[in-house]
Amino acid sequence: MSANAPRIGETIDQYTITGQLGEGGMGVVYLAEDTTLGRKVALKFLPAWANSDEDAKRRFIHEAKTSSVLDHPNIATIHDVKTAGNGDLFIVMGYYDGRTIRDYLNEDGPLSVEDAIDFASQTASGLDAAHEEGIIHRDIKPGNVIVTPKGRAVILDFGLAKVEDVTMTQDGTSMGTMAYMSPEQAKNEALDGRTDLWALGVMLYEMLAGRRPFDGGYEAAVLYAAAHEPHSPVQLHRSDAPDWLSDVIDKLLEKSPDDRFQSAGDLVEALANRGAVESPAEAPPPVAPGIDAPASAAPGTATQSQILIDPTTGAFVTRDGTPIGPLSGAQMLQSGLFQPPPPTKSKSLLWGGGAVAAILIAVVGWLVVQSVGGESSAQITEAQQARARELNRTAIEYRANRQFTLARSTIEEALTLDSTYSEAWATLAAVEIGLQNYDDAVQHAQRAVRLDESNVAGWFNLAFASEELGRYGEALGAYQASVKADSTFVPGYSAWGNRLIELGQPDEALNVLQRGFSIAPNDARRFLLFKNIGKAYLAMDNPQGALGPLEESVRLNGENPESLSLLADAYEALGRTADAQATLRLYIGVERDADKRSAAEARLN
Image (cartoon, helix red, strand yellow):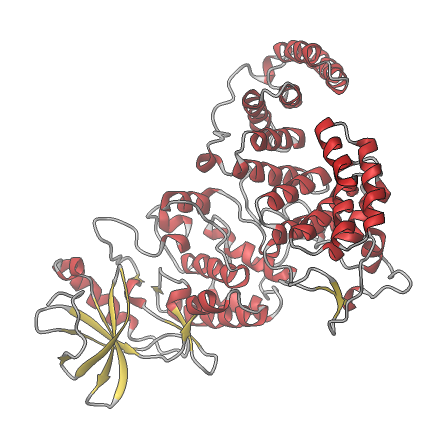
């Protein structure tokens, strides 16, 4: 009988198999009754390929026996390693009643912040004990951590464990579930306990966000993303996650193991002490000057500690659930509801620690890291550089006046003088956007950001052109990059949020937009944020929540057509017909598109 054949009802040695608990690439797990000791146990049988390889069987026995020395409440007990009558190997493990974290996520959705921290801490405690014995799990994931009815988290399946330099593989391939593999594990590099900390970071992120930090349509894309791309902050998907916890996750998901927590024990300490670890090596970086929070609440407005956003309706409520009603943008700011993030995150807020600048390179096909080509800046004289910058300013003026042909010839002249001038390539991209040559715009914007990854205009033009080409994943990535380059860049937050709304993700859009508002609360362009906050609430079928932000957007800029159109929609949805019609008349007065004006006039009639 092969390891994967049905065994229910069979008695092997002292164990009677009563049911199947699970099946995966590393074998089948059955529920069994220990007839000698009168207890339930779990029997894990190796897959057929492992049973046919004597060397693999030898190593497996060695690893399983070594793992059996682990005696910790958060690690499943290994009782024995045995051989069935047909030669198939199996492990006898403790049986734990309960639900795996995967069950929780599939059945209940994301966990509470408290439970996520608790389960992650217990898992880290178990890993710490294993790592002290030189044992690495290598397959930490939600399906391998079970929670008993009393709330004890237990790590299952040390069958993939690595002991010292003994690694069990099939045909040289890496083991472990792809989505939770550390970059070094995916590359078959030497591993230590820090690879388990990466996997626990992915699991903790998923417990909070209900999604993994790295994803893709196929395994190679997931592995590439984990090794090269930044992850979005967990707070974009879970607004109640505290900043310190987001920092802990960012540290767990550092690409280099040297930048992660150096032991599972340090992680346990960090989770217990709100991110703090009593070790000089783990001391937080110096705090940079930041944005001052509002000093006091507006009269008659609840303070920050009293205001919440109802996750179902999006409405502002007090902590006891009492609706507050719509708040204007000024009241939102004065209330302190949208507090700025810790100053140390101002430049990396949307990326996580250690994120590389060339984002989404291979998966989305930007080819940002290809050779720039052209001449070296060392070969360009100061006079050429000065003339190129003068021509760039002139080209920008031409483009502002919609004199695109003149703008193009001028900026091309600038680039003949200095082909390494990133800003000129960004300007050329903007000119091509004006001419609706979006493919050319993408190429020029890519050139701009290859030359200077902090070129905000380059990233923004790349995003805009990509969006016009329907390449929305690339657009989202470039909008993120624009606010990485300048964390106060309001148009980047606005356009990023708007694209999320258009993609049917208004809840995530709200997190992005509110984050932008908290970072740049006094920017003259903040009307864009209020406009899209209102748009997100309308997309969530919450016109009451949309009303305050849209009214504030119109107050700040009464000539923005979309703000007026959305405000009219909100009024109409709330049954305020007269206000809707008055707002539509204002909209008709500023809308340049004749078809849109006609549609609005039809609504009035």
